[in-house]
Each structure stands twice: as structure tokens, then as C-alpha cells.
Length: 547
Ligand code: C2O
Image (cartoon, rainbow, N blue to C red; front, side, top):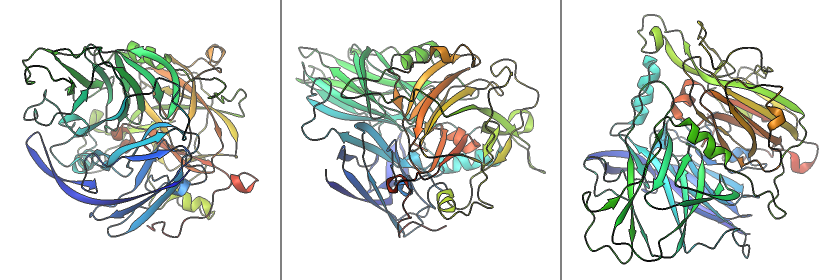
């Protein structure tokens, strides 16, 4: 293994999409940002220098950060932001992970332009557990706003309403030919016949889970969130913000005289407005078809599920299984030390005096875990934890409750008000944790992609309706459940995960739809040090930013 060094210079760059030119934060002037390519076992040092006026932090989404919690990145959780003119070197080692992850800004909505792939190749000499691809191509989904997204969310938080939706979804930074003023901004995947391609797909979009499909081609899913899975075929992929999915694309034996569209659009279950437009890119065979591509040329278009196809979503997720073999065992906790039950969902906050709010019945929108809407502290929790100074920064009384008799998915209650706080759950080192997350219908049921920092977890069960403490655990899969870092809590349902809390530090958990994060759908776990030297959080690096 070796050390890979990167210099990330955060600077503004003019970028034009949909005939709108905007100056957006970029890394080294690139949009989407540069890719990080490493091998399992490598150390990665990324020196980030902030040359814009906004504060910034970067997060290495899905990287375990074993004993390197200072490099995780969420603002005011593991670090204070990097201020204008400052630098910070993120320093971590990739342990036991291979596949695709991604990096992104982790402050406010700056992920809209600051994101890029993390490609983790297997150790030298170790083959993939599937046919060796001829080529590997990142496919990264995002969203383009014609206006400043930071202003969009600031305005929504001020007025209490829903933020405006983006103007386009993008594939590798490009909206594609189905949008106005965009046909030149189309990603083309150029392929040869009779080959196998590995598409490394990443959903970096702010606010939408996406269905993706390529016309007349089948995809074989082989890896999610940096963990191999039992290969299975599907014409459509569901990928939530925060998830990554590697698929094999086997091209046709001879080059057809046609173009094929690949397309993505939302899986949308919630209330309110969302953008139901479709982003697309072109699969182009070599030798090239006899006519130039234009939208009227015989072009095969994929069929995507309807926008709220929860049945497809549930089936797709239950098809994902760990390899669970001798070489890639699934270390699923068989016994549980601590059981937790968290509700996730939306609610309301009172409208401040002398304001008019645009949320439900004149209130402000809020979102919660166990009815607590997360309040961001103004200094980093990890530092406070390390120095034993939690006072005034966070409280350890996060309400952990067993499921109580309440119809989470039935008629909404009259009182939709939430509480606010910066509350964490503290667990001893190596606790075997089971967590059931239940979607609530307080303001309408909705699918929430929940992401846990610092861990992979096993998805041992999922279902619709209310979690049943007696019958549901009996059906848990403790043999080959999928292992990942982001899971969709089903619309009007629940999901059960298990993990070993073997990583000392402070670990954020939140809905990866940024609008819900902004409304407070986040909380944090504190994992205490273990007794051995290699079970302790080391002291902070000397260049850790101060608030
Ligand atoms: Cu990808 Cu806390 O985020």
C-alpha cells in the first residue's frame, strides 16, 4: 500500500448550463470535481485550501475513517469549517473497502457543486469477483440550479416553506438533450461491441432518489456503497442520494445502427413539489451509427418506473445481498447489546413572531429523528467530546425509546410540533447495535435515505406499515444481508440495521435529502474509546480549523 496525495484548491469557476452562466465553487476549477483513485489499504492525504468566501468542509462519504474521525468532515460535528484562506489536510486510510464511494462538501447545500468520485481498486493481484471489465466509467448524478442554491435554502429556512427545486438533474455534470438549451451538454458513453463495462454510479443529487436505466440493455449490479453484492440483473437501478452502485454493462455483440438513451428521473414519494424532469445521456457504439445523433434519429429510450413506485423500490432493495462467502464474509452481528427505535419524518415548528410562514397552516417545516429536530452547534462536537467539554454544546439525553403503541403510518396526529436540540446517543466501544428506523406519516409518509457516518451497517430487515416487535425480528436476514452506509427508510415503512460500534468518535446520521437535513433530520452517535491503544481516537491534527 502507498500514500496518495491530492491538492484540492476550492475556487470559483464560471460554468454554463441551460444557457445560464454561474460562478460556482469548484475543486481545481473542475465540475464535477476530480476523482480520487486509490487501492484498498492506501493512505489518502487531501490538502484542501479554501479560496472562496464561503466556509467549507469536505466529507469522504462512506469511508470508514477508523480512528481518523478528525477527517470525516461534517461541519460543526467533527470539525469547524475551513475558512477563507485556510487549509486543512484530510488524512485517512482505506481499510476493508473496495468499489465506489464519493467525496462532497458537508456544509449547508454546497454539495451542489463540490463533489467527485472515490474509486477504490482491489489490492494489487486481487481480481474482482466478477468478469474483468474492459473499461470503467464513473456516472455521477447531480442537480443544476440556475440560481444560487445557498440562497434557495436560506430563503426556505427564513420563510419556513419548501425550497425551490433545481432546474435539471445532471449526469457527469451535463443535463442532456431532454432539457432546453442543453443538447450540446450531453454526456456520451462511447462503447465497443462485445465488451463489458463497469459503470461506477454515484448519486450526489441534493434532494432526489433516482431511477436509472439504459434503453435495450440489462445491468448487472455487483457492488453497492463499496461492498460487493451477489450479482443480479435489472433493467432499472434505484439509487438514493448518498448511495453508490457498481454495475456491469455488457454491450451488444455487433454495433447496432442506433443510439441508446440512458436516463434518470426521481423516485418521489413525498408531499410538496418536486422536479419530475428527466436527465439523459447517450450510449454510442463504435463504429458510429451512420447518421449523427439528433433527438428524432431512431433512438431507443428506456422505460422508467412511475414516480412513486414503492413496490419497485422495495423489491430492488431486497434483491441486494452480501456475497457472504469465505473470501468476503458478512460479519453480521448475531447478538445485540443495544436495541434502538428511531422514528424519522417531518413535522412543524412555530412561526416566529411578526413573520408569516409558508409551511403547513402557517408554521415552519421541520424534520426529526424521534421528534428531535437537530440544532447545529457553533463549535465542533468531536473536539468538545475529546476534551470532555460538552457543556453548552451538546447533550447526551437523546430520547432512546422502544417502539410504543402508536400508529406511525396511519392518520396523522393533530399535534405536529417538534422539539429542538443537539442531542447524541453515547455507546461503549464495540457495542453491537440494532436500530429500527420507522417512517412516520406526521406530515405524510415519505422515503428517507438515511446515511450513517463512520460505519457500514447490515440491512437485516425492512417492511411496510408499523414495525412489529414480535413478528418482524423473526424474519430478519442474519446470513447475507446487504452491507452499506445509506439505506432508504421505506415510504410508510421501516428498516432494521445492525452494526458493531467499533469506531471511536462522533458520527453523524442523517437523511441524505439535503432539504430534510436542513430541516433537522439528523442526530449523532458518540462511540467511546475502547481499552486498547488501537481502539482510541487520536488527538486532533495540528491544522484542525478553529471556529
Ligand atoms: Cu454524504 Cu453526511 O453525508
